[in-house]
Length: 240
Ligand SMILES: NC(=O)c1ccc[n+]([C@@H]2O[C@H](COP(=O)([O-])OP(=O)(O)OC[C@H]3O[C@@H](n4cnc5c(N)ncnc54)[C@H](OP(=O)(O)O)[C@@H]3O)[C@@H](O)[C@H]2O)c1
Image (cartoon, rainbow, N blue to C red; front, side):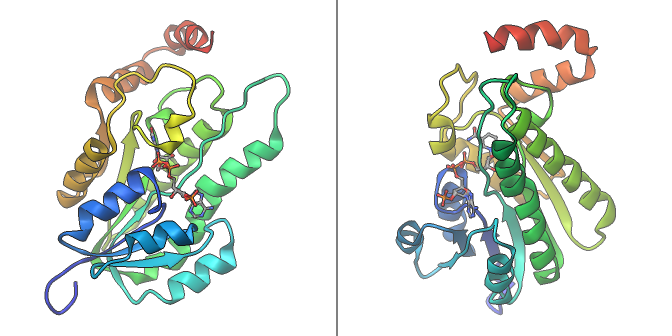
């Protein structure tokens, strides 16, 4: 918190979709450090309360250099991520797999390493995973595995960290450039505004898990508890 009581929030993936929505949402009441790669989009976000920070989070040296310039923060929201699908399971694309795991998991590790010492005692770490981590979904060998790893990593941080509250976010489908390219039905798709509202309120009340829309995420959670033999035929039907 600064001397005037204003909290500082750092958001990765601030140049698009959920991250951009969060920057706009927080900027009215907080100081925001908006992280991204796209210079033009970052400049457009710049304002009295929004300070852009440019780096590619898959490059460890860039991450360290960027966060060396950050003094301290109250809330860190690790939101940046990529989604790529493996279209043909029988010819596994290990380059795609590596790209997605690197961007979503390894690069998040770079950020955690560099940012943990910057989070003030009593501060918050928020990690945006996905409800895709609940169950095996068609074509999601890379994306689903990366988000399952991220959820596990975040849960362990909840077990381990004493003076930082950790929140794990499991969104359902949100209408963003990431999902705009999907060519399959996206049940219970929500707007960026609705998603950011859920995240903002959940972070404010320091929830351990934020998941939405409940009609979708609770259904997935229920299936994840049932025998896999009940999910398998459904997943195969989604695939067709
Ligand atoms: N949309 C959904 O339905 C949905 C559902 C569940 C979970 N999520 C998760 O929510 C998060 C945000 O997704 P979104 O839908 O808002 O996607 P988006 O609109 O594609 O935004 C992704 C953001 O991540 C940034 N990013 C990607 N790779 C980066 C890198 N190497 N270095 C720095 N920044 C990088 C992008 O920057 P550039 O513009 O430079 O690429 C962009 O700002 C992701 O982690 C996603 O997996 C989304």
